[in-house]
Image 1: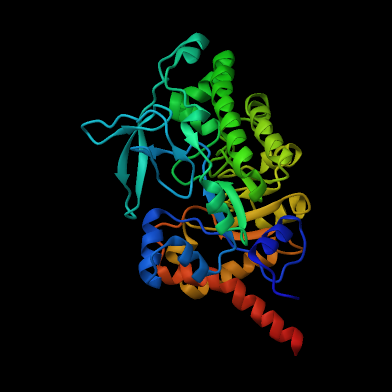
Image 2 (image 1 turned 90 degrees about the vertical axis):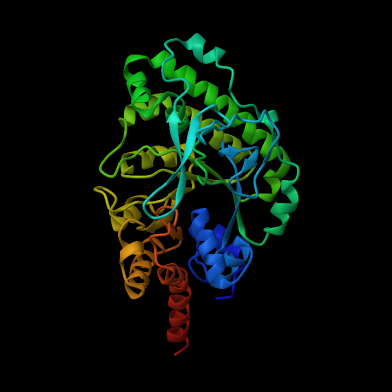
Length: 383
């Protein structure tokens, strides 16, 4: 088979067509980005991705957190709205008015944890309407992104990404209201829950419409993100997902489809019960396939849903990548390629952001394995 461009490889995989090799994607924390830049002696993440042979690039967005008006990840929209306040204790407000603080976890990675939910104590729909920190699409400038997108036109190009905390609807409700209270609202205060979801969706539609007007013709994939699963089951019932979140997410999917984009859904945990809904809604790619929980067996998922959706991810970042040997990582990658990649429909990627607890040699082996696998198959075929 002829060698494909990264973009062709990605789009053929999404369309369940044969590829010259399994396409790959990279998700890492900024600390891992820097570590790999030092390892390869390069000065940019793009150079790292080139060394790793990654087929996908991102334009980041979808409600990303901003610090002092600058994006955590790039390239992304330029924030030109009111400067969010920074407090004496080092905490700061993101663009939604959610107060956060830097927190270093055991691995050494730094996250921006929520310390105050600004809408936690409200009791009425009118209070949601009166909230004075709703972000506006006019706070973002997209025009400079055409040049960035054109630089990456040979790759599968995604707008979105969860880096920096860019969840679409449900988790944004949690950041604003508190996750426990949101789940209570779904049962005891449905009118309030619908009002909150509507305000968030209103911004997301306006934001994405403005972005698509500028660069939609240069993109391949639009990514939305919300975690509806725990390790063992759904966070809420399927009925509540359908009642409160299926239609708002469907509006974004419809918007992406109007621009001829493939739609990618990031949803952590055991979310098997929702996969039929995702397919019905028009999702083309499902990430991250955290298969360590019940009901998420890779072979079962491929058999039941593999004709309808492309799987993205599937390599465990909790046990395999941090703790296994490089050879064990290689074997794990090949197992997932053989399961998910049969007859197309698979993009190799980690099941979460790569973090500093993962040995560098395991990351390198992770991305080398599919190329070695393809080379060996080619040699065998020629023989």
